[in-house]
Image (cartoon, rainbow, N blue to C red; front, side, top):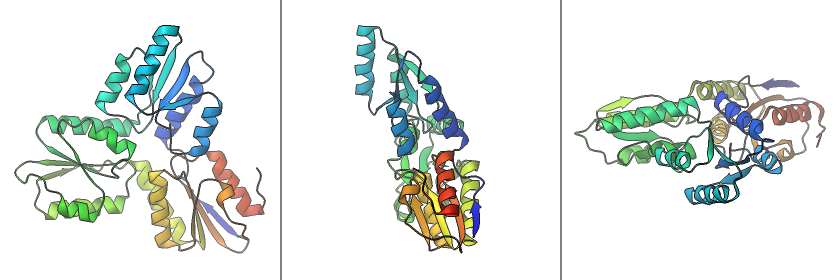
Length: 292
């Protein structure tokens, strides 16, 4: 058997920073809550829940916690995840009186700044990404006018912008690089005055390129990531084009009973996949034994 594990599989810098910050906060006297799941990995979120870390999803919950803290004197900390949040949300949390740990990825913060500055100067904002993704929702909240989100060729063809005004195009940091270029080309062909900043982070580009290379050389490809992980889903999409026998799993439990001993097997993992889960999959592929 030939087993190849992508070098860039697993936690990226931004996710490592966010997850480490939460684990470091656990055990302190403060009650800890994350604003949304800290990462799109159910295993990590469940482990943090067992350690007493809660998850909130709205400013109403922030206000409730602030009232509880004021009444009881108990210290409560809110962690902003690496996806970032809108300007209104971070401002509201900071004014609530609760402690804040902001783990917004620096690459995401850069997009926020680009969008804020360009929209102040009158540019229309287009975000190439997945509508509803928390990073995209947060980025929209830094624009001084409604931002457009484009994720498909059809949406790019039908976007009804103002041809007389400049447009700033940015990308969700984990978007598919090839698809980003395709959608930008459509907008440029439609004669918009476009300034393009490719804000797909370098870790994502490298992860996608390596996944494509490994999948093309494999009989079986395994992509490890959470069900709701956008970057993991994109890795699966990329690998599936190169290797028809591709699995998309969360943990080793999701792999079927199979003899991999005579196959070339490739493994990659999304930015929210912990190292121990990758190692468990590797061990199963090598030995055929599941250790759980």
